[in-house]
Length: 358
Image (tube, rainbow, N blue to C red; front, side):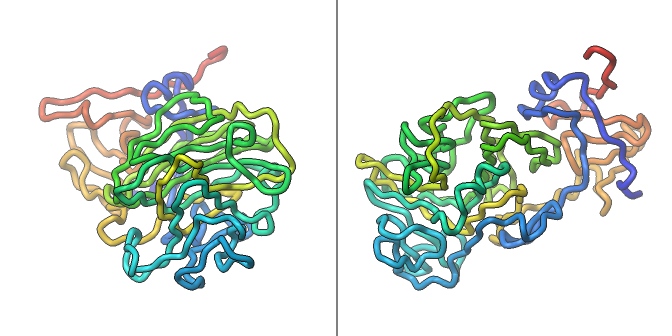
């Protein structure tokens, strides 16, 4: 049984969706087949190469190169600003063996992505995704600010210049200096564990429609940021909330910046830095951290097409987008949280068509 003719599902209101899933849907939700690219240098969702504004896995750099010298040996990162150094296995293996990455450490350090790599106007023309692998080693203190900022000559992220940003401090993620939470919450990350951070940011006057990692259609409006985190160890995406920028003064030079202030002596490792105009949810291969496709749904075997046959219980169901499942017999989408099902039965939400005036 194929899934190419699955109907879209609609909910009675966006408020209902937010209550059920803490997802911000500004249009009718439509489930479509969604596949991840195998690595961060390829685009998922059928994105073309021209959608990538910048990408580096830092493998062509020399270990020990840093951004405190001119010219910088690190692709895309602006020289003359201390804090970023290329590291390899002799330092750590946060993203697997035989891999180079960037170490960002030290108080009062700033590492912007060079405006020659991504011109400021690119951030204004349409929404962008900035994604990178992230690892926070143990034994350091202070916050690391990561986000989009502006400046007269070089982008900066402080109260006067930050546009969109979040910060990390011993695993605790928080909104930046100019980030106002709309709904949802940032997760707490484990120390010394790899993640991939996805920052969706829209400075343009055009809304950005996209399919999120849970398979739901969503939209990002001007002045909004949405955060997702991929947990390599658990093989799952975590929603980190929708945010609004409170910045009303943006200078000409715009760019993405990693920042430590004078009181911050934190350290992070990052790799596979991507800036793109199409939202690419690809993750790297980390062995045990790979996403594992489930083989069963509540004890019923899932076939190659994503279907299960539950017999007299609920008939044939399409479960690829669990907890949203499609009932072949009812010809409807159902919302079935895992906690709602046990050996004695369960309960479900059934989608209803929109009516005039709703």
